Image (tube, rainbow, N blue to C red; front, side, top):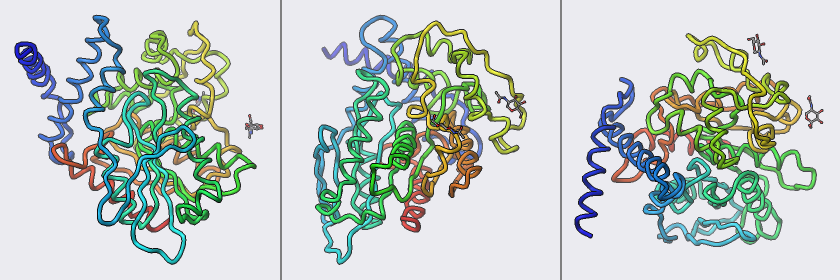
Length: 402
Ligand SMILES: *[C@@H]1O[C@H](CO)[C@@H](O)[C@H](O)[C@H]1NC(C)=O
Ligand SMILES: *[C@@H]1O[C@H](CO)[C@@H](O)[C@H](O)[C@H]1NC(C)=O
């Protein structure tokens, strides 16, 4: 057993060393720490790919196990009562301020990232962020988990989110937690941003929902897969913490375990003929500001190659950028944060343009030295000043607008 552990440790060191020299852009702070985090992440991913290749376990199963090492229990403190609960059958972690309040409170519903395949509100970083939010805003925070793509595919993740949000928006539940129905926000990062954007679209366009979401916040969200050759995909092909290849693998798993999808997606030949009309909704040559288009030439996608039928790829409930203009019009005030060194950067940038084009108010923060997933690095030993900076930008926007 000791021998096996030593062997594992040795392998880890070799893999780590072979990944440590990823160049980090000059303007990124704490470059040594970022390099070490990137090497750790890439070592895990490489191990997951290797284990999948030799048939020991699936890629997403190994990554899920790694994420689970970081799960926390609900721990109340002097200011906030923290409990785990379920809304119908969806797990939630509630953060309720202890201080007495004369008036009903604001509320934030938070949906975590993790590529749809891993993670939970139980992760240290999310527990920290949600507790911080409850404390700073004197708000009720509801962190929502959803079933992951290691076992379930779209639309299960979205349905779990909608179930939890609808449950929370009932009068009797809002009263129970002392929440003001007119001051509710929904937020999420990365794949949690995908779900947040999709849930908000569903809620705002559903005549049966009485209490509407006041604001939504999307932190480096994924919002489309129709075009896998966006400038940000090409510029960050070997990006820090998230490469184009891994982003494609993860987002494919949202729809299917069939390897044909990611293979076609890498060539940008994964969309069926009947999706032609959707491409104007994700056309980066019209939707990206000049600055981000520079040095790239738009090419029409090659359609009709796939020999699989995946309705999800055409569904705005999976990919919020596929909603048409009239479906976007009713959206609430929106905060979008994008990071320069992020494969997903252009998804967020294009959503900013699409929403503004139909008159939705958008506050947009672009982090020039930002990398994907920085919010997951806010607590020791993986603590980045960048993560704290993004947290503070997001929280101060919430405080002013919720
Ligand atoms: C995308 O926009 C460019 C103009 O910038 C246009 O030439 C091209 O046909 C558009 N493609 C689609 C699929 O809408
Ligand atoms: C948007 O999509 C909806 C639902 O498919 C459709 O009823 C509506 O006509 C579309 N609107 C526009 C402007 O294309």
